[in-house]
Structures are given as C-alpha cells and as structure tokens.
Image 1: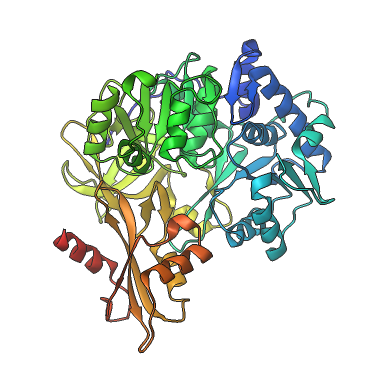
Image 2 (image 1 turned 45 degrees about the vertical axis):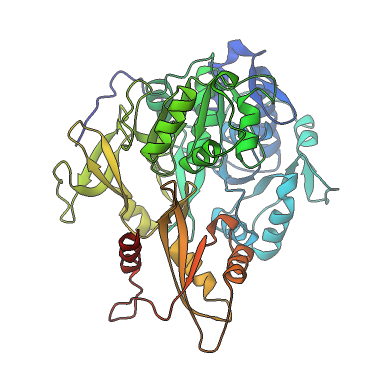
Length: 529
C-alpha cells in the first residue's frame, strides 16, 4: 500500500463550477488559440463566449439543474463548447462513444433520461434511429455541422448559439454536485452510467496533468483517444485548458497517416508538443512506411494508456524519436490515470508508480494485502473517484467500497515500488484500448442460424496487443465461413468488437453446470504460443 499526501493541493471552494473554473483560468488569454480542429481555430475568448451562449440556450429550453444532455459528437471545436456549456448551466452532459450502434444509443437515451441531444451532423442518422427505437424524453436536437436539411425538432448549432446571449454567471454548483457522465462497459455488455462531480476533473488536472506530465501554456496537445473517453477528456480538454495550452482536435479515425499529418503541422500549421495515444496505435504507426523522421516532429512528451504498453513498443519508439512513451493506467471510474511512469522516470514493462494523491492497495482473495511479486486485485483510493453508477446500486456497492475503488484488474507490485499489469480480474477484454465483453460477442454469434455455441477470449497479436478470438461450434449439418460470421457480428455490434480470429471446434470446455470455461481456452492458447 502506498500513501501520498495531497495537502499541498488546495481543494476546490464550496461553490465550484468546473466550466467557470477553466474560463476564469484563461481570462487573460482571450486571443490565444484554445482549440484547432479540421476546419477552424477557436480562441479562449471565443470559447468562453460560446460556452456561456450555449448555457443560456439550453436553459431556455426549460432544462433544469442536473437534468441530462446527451453529447454524441465527433471531436471538433463544438465538442468542448457543448460539454462545458452544459456544465456552466448546471446541467449534466452525458458524453457517449461515437463508435456504437443505434441500439446502444437508444438504451443510453432511456437510461440517462436525456432532455436534449447535441449531435454531429455525420452522426445524426444513428441518433435518429435510436430516437425511433427508444422511449426517450428528448425535446430538442441541436446539430453541429449538419450534412443534410434538418427537421423541425432539430436546430443548427450555430443558429442556436446566435439566438441567445451569454449567461451572466454560472450555475452555483458545488464540488460534489453531479458534473457529467461517462459510460463504462459492463461484464454483460450493458454500459454503466458513471457519474462524476464538478471537482473530479479538477483533481486529475492538479495531480496528473500538472504534477506528473508537467503541462504548461506553451504546449500544443493532441490526443488520438477521443474526447468521449475519460482518457481523451483529460488529454484534450481539462488538462490543457487548466494550464492555457492549445489543443488539436481530429474528427476522423486516428489512423497512422491521419496522426502523422497532425504531428507534422498539417492542420493549423502547428506541431503538437504533447501526444496521447494507446499501444495499438503506436504499433500501427511504427509499422507504417510513412513514419515521420525525428526532425519532422516536435513532441517533447508522449503518453500511453488504455491497455498495457509492451516494452518493445516503447523501446522502438524511443529509438526512432528520442522520446519515451510515458505509460499509465486509468479508468472511467477514476476519470484518469492513477498509476504512471514519469517523463523523467520510465521503466518499460511496468505501469509505473502511484500518481501523487492516489493510494494503491493490492489484495488477495481473502481481502488481505499480497506481498511484492504476487498478483493481487487492484484497489484505488483517490479524490477523482466517480460518485456512483446511475441506477445500479449493486454494481456501485461492488465497485466503490468505503473510499476505495475496485478496478477489476490484477497487478503486481515490484521491489522498486512500480506496478506491473497482470490482466483483468474477470473475463473483460481491452481491444484497442476499449473494453469488450466476451459475453456480448458470444451472444451475437449464437444469433447466426448456423451457430450452436461460441466462446470468445483475448489473444496477443505479434505486437503483444490483445485481439478477440472466437471458438465456434456449428449446428449439426450447418455451415458458415470465417468471413460470414465476422460480417454478421460487425452488422450487429460496434465494428471494433468483432472477433479477429474464428476457430471452428466440435465442443467447448464447460463446468458441470454447463458454464463455458474460458480460462481453459486461454490456457490452451498459451500452451500453443
């Protein structure tokens, strides 16, 4: 167990609105670029103006304090305006993954009881399908950068802002008031509405953004992880805005070429000094024939999270660019990283050391501490822990235990105080940095008329990164191809969830009660490796 005192960090005051906190911090930087997206630059002064106009507009719709607003948007300058505008008004933005299906959004609309939706034009068709499918409470849809004529219940984002003056003062929220939601995947595939307070992003900024990463107003930040992720939200909104830095936003997928374009100043004429990525992305970039030369980029700091970084990737990256990758672990529940390597202290193959202000405990099956070198269940104590899972008391109790957050990860503490990742405590997989439920993929596969049973596990690829592999038992006399089943899953689930490998088998290992024993499949894979 490691305890670090945070007495030197001032706690937020009794009246605290995180959006106003960021606006006030940058009042003297009105002319400076806050965000640069694919089409425009937004200054700090413009950001403050637009945040306050949106706040007025949302309240004019009759929305009341703490009511939810769904945020389904690609990364653009309108995203931080939407997120902070809702918070400024005392409303609760619910930032959701743009890679999901209409069924997922239908569930989230009902579960959150969202009263309005802020949506990118490119994502409007998925939202429309979700609205048709759900018993929602949405009264207004506000569309950023529409790509087709709008319906009467929809309003264009710019027109909406222009129609309202800036709100004179922020909602008088407190540090423990609900600030925003992020959805976290569950073991059954159902997302959990993770409720964060106004104070939580303040703490991650102070403890990690400033004290570990050492961000300053001179930095230009660029995150491959999107804003709807807890990781991306810190990287590209709360951290840089807390110090007055500039952020590059990218709507498209973070392919190697799209990333390289921003690294080399192809958007807005500026090169990022700080880049936040994930191991899968780094592997793809290092394998690309278009990898920029060291002299073509300006990165002083590179961060990684989302899944454990293979040591070999970090070493190859440093050999090419001369900059270490600072690997860490965070979670939606803790909002950002709580164990991390340091820019001046990197030990590849480990996740690093506890972030100042966070206490780490590794516990055995009996709940007691485990000795160094032995795997234990990871528990975190820190000021950025979520308040609860909305409408899920049992899971809230299971995860948030007397000030401690149970991560669901296995970790090992090393002799030097660093921590090494030991895998998920349950069967949840992280693919490309995003949780995937094996159960959800299996349940989809068995919907195919030819499939009798299916089991899904994670297997490492050549780079040591986790990919999904399905073991499928076909019905007697039935036939199906690898490609057919992959396409079937892609059609029903978010595309990143489909199994990269499919093996047809005659039976699956099971318990006496008929439960699939995934661990036996995992063990067999290790034996074949």
